[in-house]
Length: 416
Image 1 (cartoon, one colour):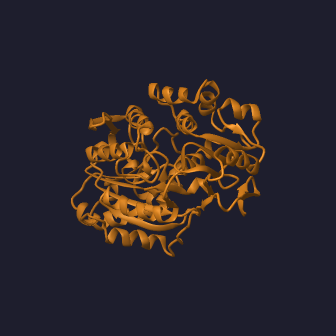
Image 2: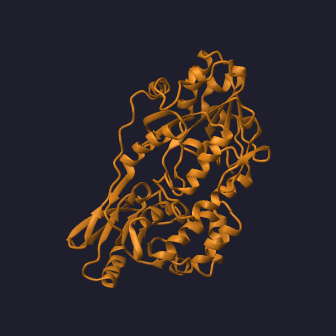
Image 3: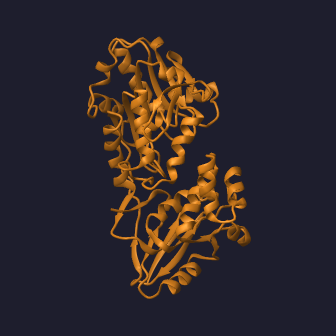
């Protein structure tokens, strides 16, 4: 018998798994943060991947735009942007010809204080820093999957476009970073929604770029809009920079993705009968909306008709109003999947992806939520992990295979 410790709430719980059933325990493995992050950025700029150096690219440019993430993202813009601005200045670009545009997607506008904090005092005082305006976009073309590429006017009018961001798994577009700074970052509502509906297509999943319709559509939009160069930071779970990549928007992005894979992707031979998944305790399981990440990752290791046992305390309930509304209104999990195709709604999109998992596997939820509420949203309430596991082992028999994800929010099991 093997005893596995799992984080739940602010402490740990144990689960006993018969050795004959334990298939694997998968853990993430952080790489250490670099000692000098600014130097790491400069080195990436000096050795761009599959691209001429930014200094050469910027010669005689009169309208340079740098895309930066908004305040809801962990991208370290205050470290990435200053060396880019220095590089542009050395190439002869005037400060007055540089604009930083914060990609808001659907999010709220920033205060001036927040903009200053995002790029640092020095950059803020020298170059124009503006928010993307979702209502002031210009049509530039249509992708072959039918997404109209409508881009924020100042971005569309630039003669050199540099995208910054951080690289991590994205639950449907494969990875964040790269051309995602453009779409959804600085596009119109119509563009964002048309692309986002692709999240229910086969091939969309974390850790997959090739053959992922959502990511490929984003990258085609990047070519239509003319993203010239990227600078992306790879962060570990402590939000420290472990690597910076710069250069070609696709080739440099893929190079950076290898570091994410090394830390958080775990290859397995086959899908199993039962996956036991802890989100990693508080605050990663503060509500079901946040815990979705762990459930999604667990779903890539479970076979159709298998069971997931999810540990998520959810002390703040379901966690998002639109998400809650859809989960409570649905009569079957398929309702949410249908509704998202008729009308894309932020917040509700997580209800759709959770319901896609619920359509193909049983999900036991070990949480602080009321049992009736848990049943109403198509999960099976469980008093403890052990109780749920014993029940699942009884159902799948002697040879049932069990896989454990102690940090499901940041571990991606991947069947090649």
